[in-house]
Length: 320
Length: 287
Image (cartoon, rainbow over all chains, first blue to last red; front, side, top):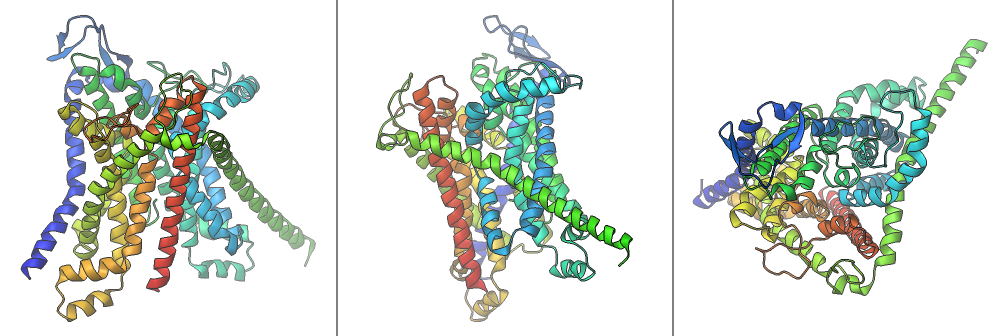
């Protein structure tokens, strides 16, 4: 090998090493930052509703070898519930819509129009989340709070979790709706590509035996799409779990309470990290910042798990 | 045909029509909400757009008049830092994946890790850069914001560079190598050049993605009501200002938030359209 070739190869190899290294350093830094909080909180962190900075004017006390303010405790069960519940509501709403739209785009739209509609869907997938949040905050919440939730809650009054009180508009269902709107284009765009990758010969074989279009979709295309569909949905779940701004602006930012029904205020791990940063920085023992790092670590591990599953299930080249 | 098979045929036709109707409704229902969001953004944003938007500073509360000039320049600065830091590394890593690790196990692992980095929550990347840069320096800074966004740029560029280089026909590699061209020249001057449109597409997509990013910036570059040209000081960016102004009670700030949202959304759309145009053209050339 020429020296110049060897030098080039070493250089690009080092660049490639940045990818695993940055993930590793990311994990190590979060683990390092979260370590005092992990020692102080123990397993209660995941199973109690107690995020409390303690008496900020008291003298620090030592608990489990860690300096904290008196009365402080950091536990985030309510955030885990809020994150999972809002993401699951989003998926329940987004998957049927996304699948319907993907099938429609791939199978029923005339070829000339298809590429434009597909482009529109892909562009919609790129609308910044802060714009979704702004719209949700200014337009959607007043509408839902005054004209939708009161009727919905009255109509469903016997059903657990769906009945009154209808709340203020800021809450679990609103977060789920806006997250769903962010997920629909993602699901539709990725799934449409998977449908179009179905060999044309299979469609033609279906047509040749006299199947209707719907029968071809239902009996030939959809069975082949089971794994991609699960993969795309899991990818959308990953996006919903980590979504920060839109949820921060519309969820009501509940503290230490579990949602009583789907209209109750919630908070999610990602949005709570932003909403608590200011007050955490005031903690003289820094334990609140370590606690935020522990939330970040938990969120990262959750999202790594979800996304790893999604990538394994999905053929490469599909994900956006 | 007997009566049974006619009714069965009708039933199948009906099921087909119903499914088509449901698919159409699902698409229209989804599009309805998204077009609604766009329509509100455009109508409220247009109402607030004026020359002052691009020339004046973000106003102090209660937020009458003023513009977003410092936020536009701040976003530009942070995005340039992100591209400068993320693009060269991304292209280099993409070249390694496509040319030296096309089919080996290490390449597969790196590609998988790259996909994982691609979908890591952006807020966690912000928290990471907070611990890495902001805390040691003692204050929020434009540099930290740029580095956080660079972690979003990197995997996007790696992925597109890798995929685009692998699309280059291997006859081109073989032809150049048989003439005795050194491999680094083959990669940089022949393969990278013929995949140029695709690589630029990746950079545009990455830029579109970071232009609307807000969460990591709240942990890194924070905000600034005034001009700032020092990369080591906090800086205003459009998405963060949209967030700050949207959550305020002042109608003047709300109007500026909508104007900012319109500009960012338009920018993201234009970048998306450009990247697809480029990609469509480069595909034609390859065939």
